[in-house]
Image 1 (cartoon, rainbow, N blue to C red):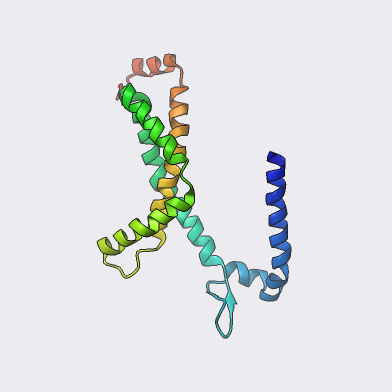
Image 2: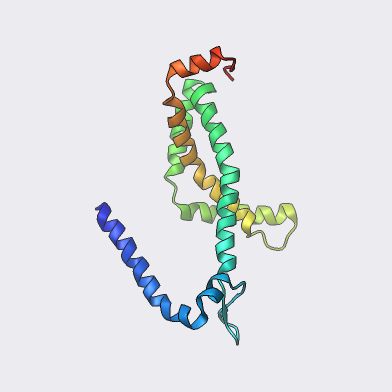
Length: 171
């Protein structure tokens, strides 16, 4: 089943590339990749995707910058400092958050976060890169926390005792 899935994704990718080649040849590869304006419905249409590529890169980088430290510190707290009962409860909640589809995160972001950004910062439209970064950061938190907790708990107790002996503290 995994090979069927991979094959299907490859087939879709090949189809999209083959279907897009005539348009890219007409526009020009350089103008398509590095053009700074997308105006498909204009009298003189332009099809530059550089802003889309850069916003994807900036959004991903921003989400990682925001989400990784929060997720890692949450994992350290859950794995080493939290009471057992709270750690179990947090594990269940994190598992639940991991199962929420990304469409739901996006919908909540559009319905709750975008109006909040609009009101807090007094801008006419709150839907921008900042809102996308926050939604993406929240989306990646469960994965980061789960992986980090597993990695922290996999450290042998002897290594922990050795670090304490060398001067580290429990907190």
